[in-house]
Image 1 (cartoon, rainbow, N blue to C red):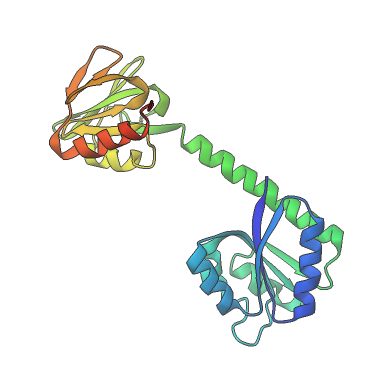
Image 2 (image 1 turned 180 degrees about the vertical axis):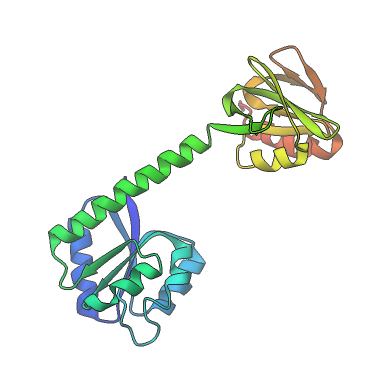
Length: 241
C-alpha cells in the first residue's frame, strides 16, 4: 500500500531531513513540500488530497494549529513535526493523528507511518464492508433487515414505500424510490429505468429496444427520461469489433 504525503515547514533544513526520512520508509510517496501552510492549502485545493500531511507548528505566515481545520479536509492523517513539546495538547485538540518531536529519529518516524498505514487499512476495510450491504427498517418496531447489494435484482416503487426484490424473495420498507436511488448513486450497477423501477445490472439479461429484460423473466420499459444515460452506459461497456 502506497500513501501519498506532503511536508510543510518554514525551515529548509527541516524539510530536507523529513524528506530523507520519507525516502527511507517504504509505502510513502512524497507529492510536494511547502515553506508555509498557505502554499500547501492552495496546492491541496487544486489537486484535492494527500493521505498524510506532515506539518510544522510554529511558522511565521500561518501556524500549523490555525491551519488544521482546513488541512484536515484534504487528508486522512495530519501529523505535526515540531521542536516543542508544549504544543501537544493544542495539536490533539485539533484532531492531529500524530506528534513527532524534532530531531525525528528514523525509528520513531517509521513507527508513526506504520501505525497510520494500519489505521488506513482499517478505514478501507470498513468502507468495503459498508459497500456490500445495507439495512432497512422492518415491519416491527426496532426491526432491521440486512440486504446485500449483490442480492438485489430490482427495486419497485409502490405508493409511499418500496419493495426490494432479491434473489431469495422481497422486502418492503417505507422510503421513497428517489431516496433509495440517492443511496445507490455511487454504485454503478444500479440504474433507474423508469419512474417506478431500479434494476441491478448484475441481473440484466438483455436490452431489446426500449425494453430491459432481467434474468428472472421480468421486463421493464425504459422511460424517455432515463433512456439516454442508461444507453450511454451500455455503449461504454459494449464489445466493439
